[in-house]
Length: 445
Image 1: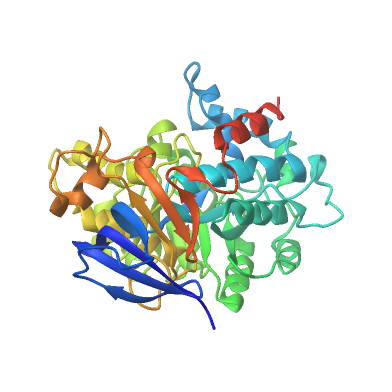
Image 2: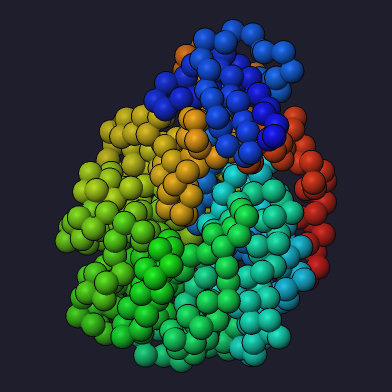
């Protein structure tokens, strides 16, 4: 018979409130019972001191961008100059070096309480665009890396076919391109769901997939009932080029080709018209905000409140990994909106945690994750309430403390599928995560 493990949470966020003394029974990787009013740990229970929350969902990641941290902070520039540095790193990766880097990056995520990642994956081929013997070698390296780091992955295999509207891929972009959407779909068909792994699709952007081929990617995702993500209106230059090429906004172009819908998530959704917001909201297309990257790249502040009011569910991602801290992403979404509007209190701590957990997992095709309730996947993280950042406030305000003062450094334990991946701040599979990151990045230089 399956073994039941009991975890006892000193405090647990049971959306929308924090409860003291909660016992979580876990059997077969799922929560089978949630018992409140349990002031002391039951015999044999695993004790979790601090605030237990559902595992965090990082809905937008480019793992190899972690190698850019700090190196792109020298000098000035724009998103487009940053992109040239990113291409140089991408050119150096092989399946083996990408595995080592991604394993270390996903380990950093596990240490930050992240239990699922959406990897927006477009680095498919060898330099020059030559396919590997296994055409999905790079994607499989990412899947293996997530497995060793102990977190779930949704591999969002990305169609990236052109440099711009009607332009052939550049030399660097040849590694990304399958030539046509049909060829992309044929290659992506070789990727399969498995334990801890779900396969989704992505359209890199409206500039990178010709309009007449957008439906091919959308139809592939629809046939598999898989998540579909797309970078959307991150830059005003992309909007202007789309208007020049098609006489409409990127959002309208996606709508006209059947891309929008409840399984679709637009990433960034920064520079939108009122009609764009109505199109996204009325179709229940999600919005993944990545505030630390959007401010790092000087992208701008997206209309997150208006999108949510219109019906677009919000999720969060660390994108370029300027930092990997979903609590900071949640906090930044609120604080950026305060700067933009000069008013406070757009989202409660509970609403921000919901974006970082329940709605993030749903955007990645894991609707059974992101909640502490019977039947849900036993994925959770524990935030210490006794660090120099979190000590002081009363436990009833633990959610506010975590979101508005806590950080990834305050994550004490991470559990995935009922298994302890991080215990007392140490990753059980990769105990020296800092060395793993240093070695993997050094190998690229």
